[in-house]
View 1 (spheres, rainbow, N blue to C red):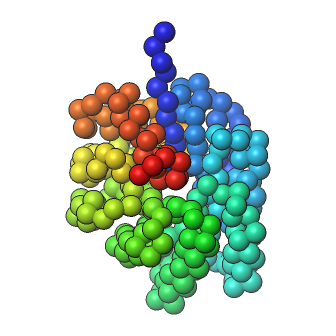
View 2 (cartoon, helix red, strand yellow; view 1 turned 180 degrees about the vertical axis):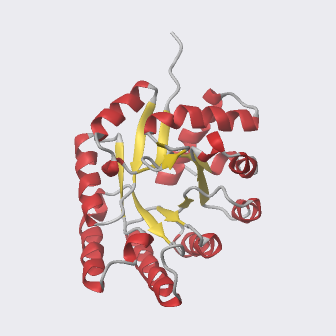
View 3 (cartoon, rainbow, N blue to C red; view 1 turned 45 degrees about the vertical axis):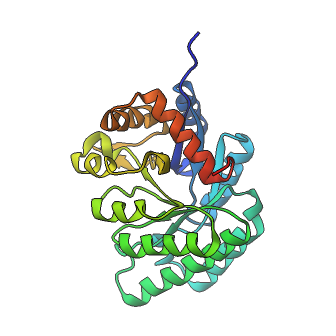
Length: 260
């Protein structure tokens, strides 16, 4: 009997799904065995930790404050969220989704605040020896440079999530060790995203759905992962099975579960 291909969703938001257990079960039937569920605020952190307890070794929780959320939060709220992260960081597999979002942070003051809180979250992650997942909407270069600093300063890896908008920036990432990028459902619908992914280094590539973010008018689901892998495999002209094996090795390395 042939061994079934095993996949992982390296970036999703299970806490935002209407019926997370149902979506997990549907994806598992297709071979998706691990789900890196990212948080955005206090409520999502609590929900992701609960899902991780319900699905141990399957749901890998990330704790963090999403940069877009920061814009509408006062300092007291942010301080409480940071305290929660520090108190529960031992239960996290990574810190995420953290980063920069200049679509929502329109002023220099707001952008500086995002940068400051990103650094604070870096320090928490480093103290716990955890990797981080970085969001970079309309702030790709500063977020990328922040990723470089985290790796250089603390020696732990970074995942630049959904980093498929610029060949030029991806080539810069390729020259730096410890930086991973993830590609998602955009490759199913967007030729530009496929062009960028073609320049990725296979041993630092991960795949994601960012579920439930919509693509082509439909909310993404973790069960889309096999389709994403098949599409990327066709770009590199390798089998989906071989790509899936490489992706699992990459994820283990990112999470610190395997030798570099």
